[in-house]
Image 1 (cartoon, rainbow, N blue to C red):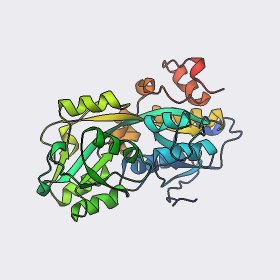
Image 2: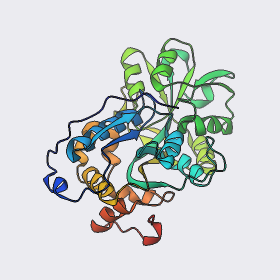
Image 3: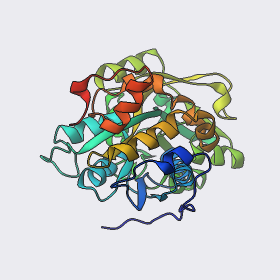
Image 4: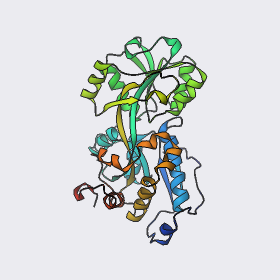
Length: 325
């Protein structure tokens, strides 16, 4: 199965990478593709911008590809169909344990961690005109959009809604498409799992009044007790629709790479990304959290030797046992 490719190819030249160009590039790929997710979501914006940034500065042609998201990205990177990808730690753990819904029984053990990206908040949006201002306001039988089939949202959010006693009908689609359906009154709620600000929400609230819905004390406790998530606060400044911070739950995301990729290539990609956070933030604000200090959030994937070398050289120790050899 092929996926729509995004034209994100950059010219093969380096801006500040003269030392990189001078080094041994044995085994480096002639080009690379990053597995992201659907358009209108943070993975697509972050991944396509990051691919361009890497391609431009390392002199390797690269771009992004629309996929079904973290679950599918794990499978594509494991098999080598894609060399780089973005994933969330929940789906990553299931894939490593051989519990991926795409390939039950297959332990996807050829995927290595590169660097921390950001936390994915699980947030809910509804039109203000619907009267839905809290999870308890969602009427029985409401149609909820959970994002692309197999995405982090689609994998976990329905289970969360069931745990909170919400009776719903399930709808899948890209974030952009679901945002349009919400605006047109075709669905009642969209349950997002994406880095903030979510492009589809930002676009939606420019056109209509939106309620961005958080969790109360009991709801947050129920979910954190039952799922691999932690509490997360969405700052009020994230969306025009928020008058105060919104409490939700979140799961960490990491950039990953096929473990067979050359150490020197992965080292340079990690170095470029971790040492240029301002440029990453200019790609997407979620990259404020794409900093080396958050490397400890990976307790699931083995580290690629190239990535681990950069972290160890820069004071972020990774035990040898946690590195793929």
